[in-house]
Length: 421
Image: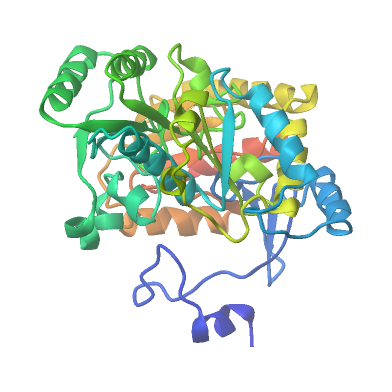
């Protein structure tokens, strides 16, 4: 019996309606940019397995570092102990983060990194005996699946069953360069009418919304206004962090820096689950007290797992190499050329790209998990390319190590798909 058949007996997969689509392809090997299924078929992983394996699958540099760590220290609880890999990671991460970031808090996944950011903002004011219980987020935002993260997300398919149980969130449109002033006025009205603790945002690219890209100046004005009104700014860089926008962090494109930054996904090069929430000294200082209850009581069993810290250290070292930076620049150039080539195709409504992220909207409407999406996904897989459309949006976010020929195959496959839409 195949793995695919055995899977159906006990496993409940995420983001899946099993009655409509009970099958799950079994992957038995991954190396570089290639996924191999149990039947020997190969697929170019053109989205880096949800933006995690940016240095390729089973990267030798990362795996060797983790293998060495396994021989020294595998796991230790982090509430009472520390260890070399965590300390070293904190030192190296702070070096590449925006200069106002001073403290890092470990957790286990992207949702909990934003959950911690939300708690930091709300408890910051609680500790100062100020009542601020409202958050602001963008329309169509996505920040994760835990309750706090879900509350600030704006995609109803993910959170509509739980809407009566969520914290109070006010939403504003993303600034697009034309509506910047109107968005800022809307934010001003929200702050006048509510006790706002924090503003959380995906800087410059909204991933789950279909790689929606928005205006840098407009975001900067929002952040400046928040700062002027003591609203904690939280940058969710779970998707955008570690080089994907052409800089180490999307926040590096923006003059006004966030108070809090949420990190995961490519943090460990996709090898191990881990997340980090960073903050300024001012945020951290608000939790210092003789009262135990004013501490940040959020803890995961595997926080700062030594193996994950080793993977993250190796990934950060790779990110800063000239080889990886050169690869990022090449991908940016290839995306630009591809965009010019297809932007006037009758099936294409629009194209956009930032860093290694490329997206196009098809000139047709489709539900996020509708027939068109399923048709395109099957087409891509049959061609040996793993792309996962979001409604009528096709996007690419390839590993930095992808070869020119592999990337050209991805482009060619998309162009072939345009003929069947």
